[in-house]
Image 1 (cartoon, helix red, strand yellow):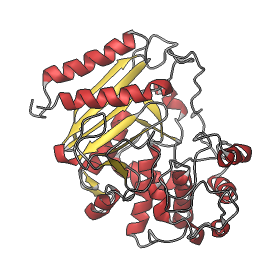
Image 2: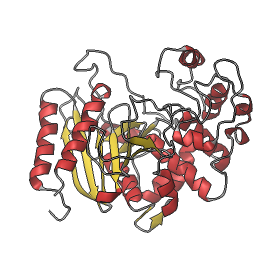
Image 3: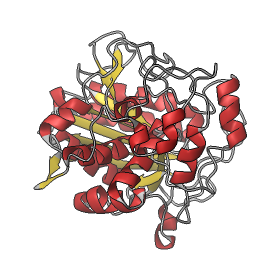
Length: 376
């Protein structure tokens, strides 16, 4: 094929997804592969809603959870390109409560949390589900995940909670990007959702993306099994039928596969798509470089041979990780099973959308392996 993907390889990919769906492992899926910034494969499989018989449409809308983070990270760097902040700026410059953060021991950290720390997850913040220690317990007690709050209220709550690590010393997946979303609001002078819609979603033609699904489009919202097919545990996903008070920069958005493909095409285009420039070429290069330099990292989330940039995991070695790719590939995924990667060396990007939290790791590995196996 002109795309450099073999028909037989794509047939293997499609057969694998159909087989898993027929076995009851996931309800359905939509996938897209891009080469040189253009979609070369876009398919839907299974059912949109396991409680109904209608097939999954290609324009189904998915809860993308942490695939919100790269979009919000791009938004922040757009403001950086305008000279509105420096990466070394303390977060307290924009949210004064962060001038007095403390470690769990009660000690004052050696240096403040910076905007760069938020982008690369070295802030010392954590997620309430990332362990059972006193810091996570404090997050739970403060109800930092609740939907009935504003971004400003969550930021204020986070400022009063202990840090898990001193800023700049550990990579720990966290509510850093939620806080970054509040920084964007303060600098831009508008809500995070409004800024994203005006500066990224509308210019890129991402018409099915945002922090909720309009009523007219709810019939395209993909749903999960009510219980996990392997464990029997109940599955609960975000309610996205109404605009939320909390516009979570770390995990609150929805999007169609085609929409996220537009975002990936912009990344493959070194910050531009169809004559619209979102980011400068060197800004994107900075974002997709390693910013950890060997700092200790949570190994369950950051694969071997990888570092982390400003909003993306970044591949540093051709081996070590249990999946294929090129040095310089960058990626992330979402709690409910969505996943993407961009491989500049192969001029390749891909995105898979599913709503199956318990199966997400399986499909991230399966999809990536079979896409690369289809390359000629």
